[in-house]
Image (cartoon, rainbow, N blue to C red; front, side):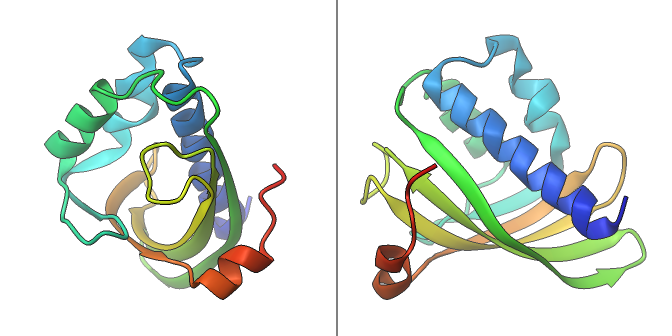
Length: 144
């Protein structure tokens, strides 16, 4: 399997879990093995709104949002490897959300940059999201 395939599978698999978590269809005991265990202890996640979130903040947010959004869906597109060095990969992708009740727009799209360590399992080190421009979002499809 190529690095791009491994990274794509990791990103898509994790976001499929997010959708199931927010839908309430994932088993509650899967938060750690499917998500938290993949985060580096010092991870920083910066969502499009700009606040810096750490592992504890992410855990609290997920703990409080299980089953909170039954119609939530995610599609991952445009995964690209931007840089590789040793066992570290910098990748980008777009994330399209539909039915997102906790976002400013129920149908939204964001550009994400992620730094991963290609361990088993993959370790997520850093994430930065930026809203996609309205022209890109409105031209995209939310049929997924």
